[in-house]
Length: 193
Image (cartoon, rainbow, N blue to C red):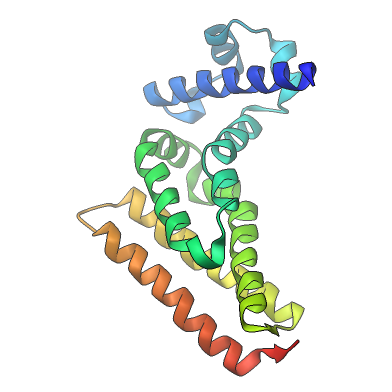
């Protein structure tokens, strides 16, 4: 247990150093040497915890947002989860934009994709339980991917190009789309459990 706490504290120190560096310059210009120097650790310690700087970035972003979003009761609180995610993206726009400008849309999307897919899958699973219906596994996988692509695109576009777009309306549209489309999907494709 003591080792786990020390390991987590080391990871947090490395993530904090990365975040600090990303506020000053593009992600692609940041080196492991800078990160370890800022937090007073050595290269061996960095590589013990993270394979490379991209893995550190992914871990940092997951710790900040995705892990918390996963804990919401998504059938009841998915609007709160979306709101939380948008808060996070807005409050950390310097970090997100640094990563986006350095490694591009596809790589930033890939950092979040598996976690967002899991969140969307939980929403669909919770909907199955609520309706006492099930969806065929291949269709459920397709639907999870479909929603993940759509929502990640909309949310990332909102944070990158927020030119007066009303956040409440974006959340309302996303939530309404989830609610309305899942209702129709379960009417057509849902099978009684």
